[in-house]
Amino acid sequence: MITVQQAARLLQENDRFEVLLHAYPDGDTIGSGYALCRALRLLGKQANVRCAHPVPPAYAYITDPYTHQDFEPAFFVSTDVASLSLLGPGGTDYAGKIELAIDHHGTHERFAAHSLVQADAASCAEVVLAVLDALAVPVDAYLANCLYTGISTDTGCFKYTNTTAACHLAAARMMQAGADIEQINQAMFDTKSRARIAIERAILEGMEFFADGKIAFITITNRMRQETHAEEGDLEGITSLPRQVEGVLIGCTLRENEQGEYRVSVRSRGPISSAAICAQFGGGGHTGAAGCRFTCDLATAKQQLLAACTAALSQAQ
Image 1 (tube, rainbow, N blue to C red):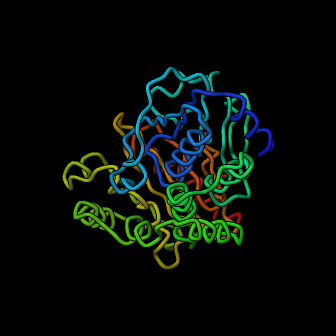
Image 2: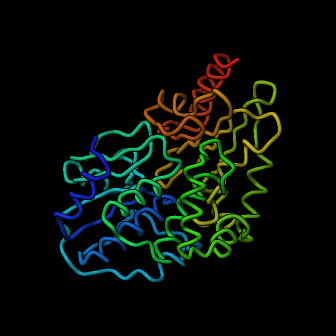
Image 3: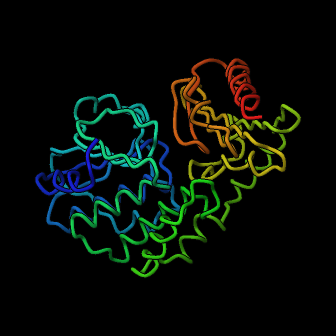
């Protein structure tokens, strides 16, 4: 592991950057990655952002001002990527090529030559902010929008258990720097498309409860997405639904991908560790939020996941 100052030195000494986001991008990887790209350009360097999947339209206030530069990348840096597999299709092509990984996941796998990981940070955006400070890059309104997005979305608008005094202070600083929090909060937390409403209804109708209502599962299949015309951006924040139900301590979202596999997001309360549950299936994340993947059929995935959740619940009681 390296320090913020060492990471800043690496960025200062190199050029022609490609900033890598994780697949199915969320607000933190988007905000962190685009902020880092903008900062590098402000330093007179060439930099682009790459993601295996399109950035949802809700983040247009971040992506619209961005323009792609034409150059051959020489330095690869990832933001909010806990493992190489999370880069998505083509991610393995970067094995041995990534020079710097900036992250905040305690389960981070060391796939880069240098890793800057602050597991106590609520968001990767906070780690990127520390790097920008070390680079002496002033935070303008665009950077403030990016970083506030990362902080606010990864804390569920400051409601999740990972919320800290430090992230509140960082968010306040972004507000002072010109972040348009009204636009961001409306886009991230107060607006739902009709497709989102339709798929949310289907998801809620199929919600399953176990362990006297302490465990809840929701499933999102490709057929459900097709029938409701839900796009990737329509599923933002959907993983919080199971845990919003009264009495639920562990909420799991099983989501089918294009290959017929199931990506799982686990959200938990109290001493129950989502990361420990997901680690049993090769995944990881934070205590209150983590993820993993199943390549088996849905019934088997549910059976194995429920067994792990039940064991975690029993140990916590």
